Image (tube, rainbow, N blue to C red; front, side, top):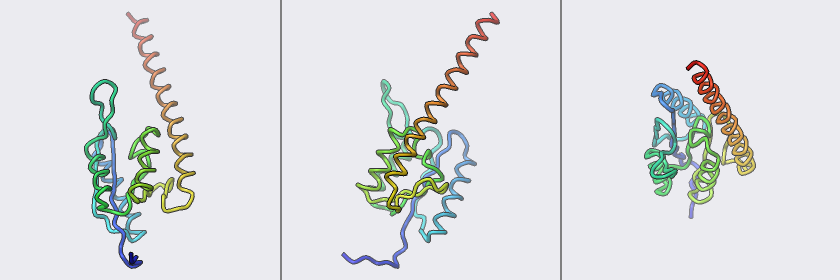
Length: 163
């Protein structure tokens, strides 16, 4: 198999925002700038509004349609690299994130590059970096969850006192 070193690599951009269309545009701009800096041709843009997954059935999570489309397109090798502004654009849940990134790199031979510089699977230490980021992301998720739970408990207690 011949490798053409002059061949332009192709990139897909993944953006996600809970509610804001404007945030998607900001993310896409940052990703396009990174693609241009690395001489990648952007061929696909995937825009998700809402969570990276949706619930279906009893406590079962399925990936959002746009994320499923991106993963299907990786199987067809429609691009060489996925660019995101940060890894939480895939998922804030490391139980979803870690296997997804690993599978993209190892099984599909698709690199993942984050515009914030936290991950670049083109580098030799990407597994170490991904593992550390996953642990930190899970810790952050737990801390946020606890703060939200305490806030709801305070609101509930205040409501009961005011009755």
